[in-house]
Image (tube, rainbow, N blue to C red; front, top):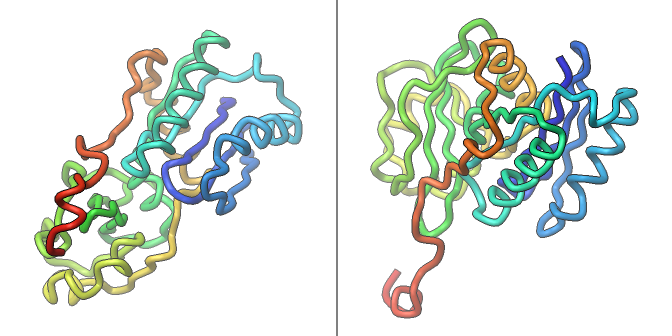
Length: 228
């Protein structure tokens, strides 16, 4: 199995190549520079893996939720590359990618700061080493986030830091540990994509869609000037 994958839905640019069981990856904070990084890094990692683009079986891409521009960039690049190479695409949730990087055996709550006073929320648990969603991903006000069931949860994502004072005491009380610094990792993206490829879940490029969760991109002038 030979995959090229990338996620640009956050301030981190994550690019990786999976070549016959070995992963080559690069992840860096590159605010507003994702466009400059994805393709050059892809070429460098393919060369390191000893692969040509024509040898790839599929493209893996983080489809969000996350920054609108970053999500659009990644999905558009994945579709363009896949169409040119006549190979399928594997869309991977950014929240699932964050959860996959965690070694916690129990349930995982991912809260990513979505700006505008809201957060992207996903609940996961690993089975056979790969995360599975416990509920549909949502865009929520922090104070309305409720865990699906009581347990010792692992909390991941920037939402735990950005909205610490707005999250309920019940939710925080069930967190065995919180790491608000975790960002999407290329290795985690490729682990999920590799599993999905084996399961026959690769799709035609034109069928991959961004997972925005929010239709509204920005506050209106009236909302920005009104009370917080």
